[in-house]
Length: 125
Image 1: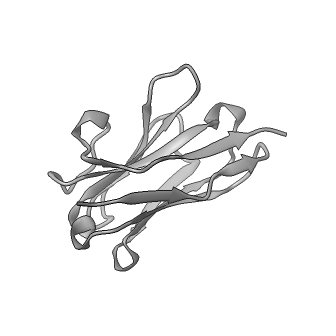
Image 2 (image 1 turned 30 degrees about the vertical axis):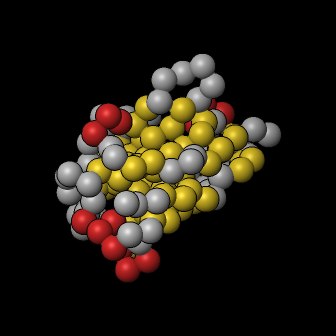
Image 3 (image 1 turned 180 degrees about the horizontal axis):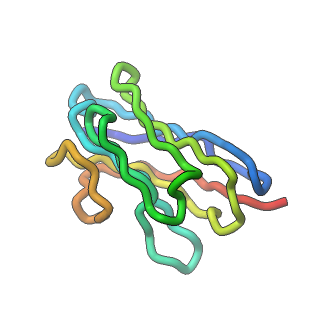
């Protein structure tokens, strides 16, 4: 069993650059692909970014490409989402998720087995 805990959210000004962290319990986390998703009020949950077990493969939604960067430190069982040039439309609850059956990230939320509780990111002046 893997438990995921996201931290790093909060109120951020437009253009800000917070970093979200996803800390995991469980020795096998380092072999799982991990994705970040977000859900804004009244909208469907959407894929943001994903990373392979080694960190060698990353993928991004078009809406965040060039602004966000996903990375991982397997020694710390942690995955990060560096968010830059934030816009009000980035406001959402951000979730990390782990896929135990794949080492490469998917943009489909239904393949992920473990989810964190989410962290709110609000972009507003």
